[in-house]
Image (tube, rainbow, N blue to C red; front, side, top):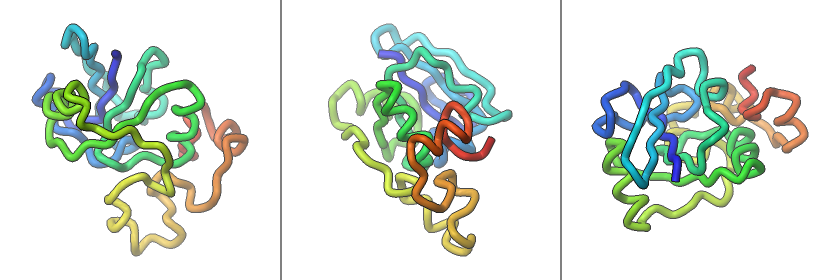
Length: 147
């Protein structure tokens, strides 16, 4: 399985998982069968850096609803992990201890408290309102609404 993890800095499997997918400065792509991995600079935006040929994303909770919906439409599975590093998260995935995310209310995780003071959740990646799949297509390929 080809797995994508948002990371703060590229350090191989020791890379620390970034708390928010959209705001992650880098993406680590790992073939879970061979453990081969490579990094992608996502400083220009993780949505545009996301390769098409992945099977799953393992993140720490922050993923916009529009992006989540688009990933699901493309058949990409999304998992949430509390692991600190990519290697730990991949071990959890291999052990079957990560539960697949089935629905995202807004940001999809616990980082929402950081946005509590922001009016209508703008900037958290969820666009603040009930975005539909049709809306996602109007906002860019990933549906994250920041394009």
